Length: 629
Image (tube, rainbow, N blue to C red; front, side):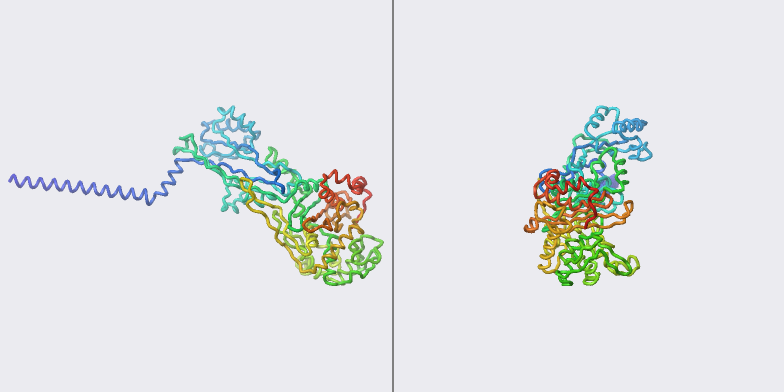
């Protein structure tokens, strides 16, 4: 009996051991499955959460690439050390937000309401996320804040370089400026790495090559607890990478010369190297100071510029259009020669007017030019000659075709934003635009560069470049080289053909000779007296009915190239327009002579002016200068 009881006890004990073993095994299996789920299945998720909880990251702004003129001898745009001031509401004791914000506003010279706008309307909600209150803060103000930091809980500062435009004036239209990214811009650029606080180029080169100059932001990583409190004062630093720097084709010596030659006259001027498309100078007046955008009263200054009737933000070289006027006779001469439409020696009588379609069209010289052949018609800019040949020898279709070969009505493809195409009218264009038929009067107007034809000064410079290059126009460009952070050239802009003509080389030689004759025996003889080098070119006077100016008013045009007898690699094209809103002085030819004098004489504007008595005479006797062509 005793043996039976022992056997039963032993079986019960074995059962208990088995049950305990099963429970332990099942517990182990459950823990193993849970551990597998945590580490393998959900490991990446938990690791990300762990990193969010255990670290906080602050961006270190990368310095934007700098900008240099063609000689890379001195910068046009640099980055100046500056600071941004931040606030962290969670670090401000309860009930003290208004006091801290008001005190900080007084240091920064802004309104408290400006700070309030940076935060949620519910300021009682604490956040450990720092919010930028103001950037572009100088070190002197940071020093004042630091001395009073005990009264400014939650306030901190960091380095944030500010764009400093070293060279100001007419170069503003070339360089442009930077500003805070807008919501609309962010929608377009978000996938390219731009963020809500990104600073981006708004105009000019700053906008065109923004992605090159952006650089890569660095990071400062600190360990924090779940509530965001900093645990370790030793951060992990990932250094920012500066953006690429740019070397422009602009020569600042020439830029300043052209700026002074144009003077305070609403208009534009450009200096182009025709054999490769490099722009050596680009001046548009009025201009603006890009540094206003980082000034404390930026809003007031910006409003004044925006409301200026002369529109200083417009780069008139590429973004304003005008009738080309008699500069268009360069294209007409080329077409007549190329088509053998009329013998260059055949003479047409100019009596000062012509009757056509029940209207009387008057030449700019009311008493007439007499009998003129092609060369002298171009030199004297005789309207009657080109009216007759445009109507009887060419016709609108051929005129438009040749104008297109010269790039009129076509994209400039220049590396600057905002360039206009202009208008090259045709019968089909007029009917579509105005629902009117083309008539003979339209052909008359087109033949002398008036009417519906509209071009930018850069188009006119390209037109003359086509003549210089005997049938080629290269894409005008502003960027010369791209530099890495060490200053090494990593890429250079190569010349690209924009338009190429099949016109016979003999035609170009004759056009060049006729343009030279225009300087020596034509309407430009007086303005170009004592020119430092041999020049060739064409004057122009564009009639306009622009609002706000006198009933009869004219834009003054001049486009020229030289030295006439030099290899094309050494020649330059200069195009100048002075708008009709200015006091009439037919200034474009005189400004052009000043520019060539300064460039090839290696002279300042003042020295060039001293060398040209006829130019000085015009400056001192503006009221005696009549309308010319």
